[in-house]
Image 1 (cartoon, one colour):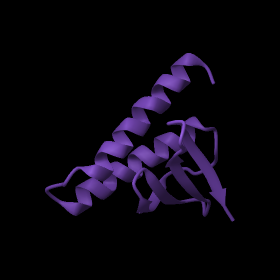
Image 2 (tube, helix red, strand yellow):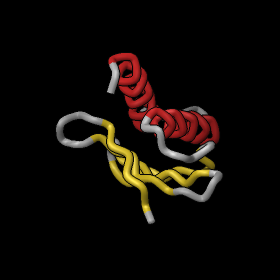
Image 3 (cartoon, helix red, strand yellow):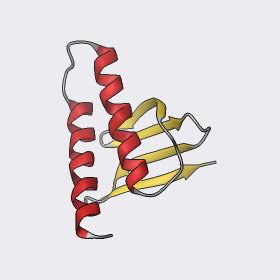
Length: 89
């Protein structure tokens, strides 16, 4: 991964993780932020998605994202602190 892509992925990951841990004033606003962040993380990995239409938090730093094109992904941070995107069949 090139340095700029790594930096963008890191920024997106931090934003995504912070959004999940903050108490939002309005749940809809928080959900939209998480979906946008997950969309960016998936795109930075070069995976097809289009846009995340729904997301559910499975645990701390662990999300399942459903895309408008029908693809589903698990997005999480591994033990080394790297953001991992895995396709769900």
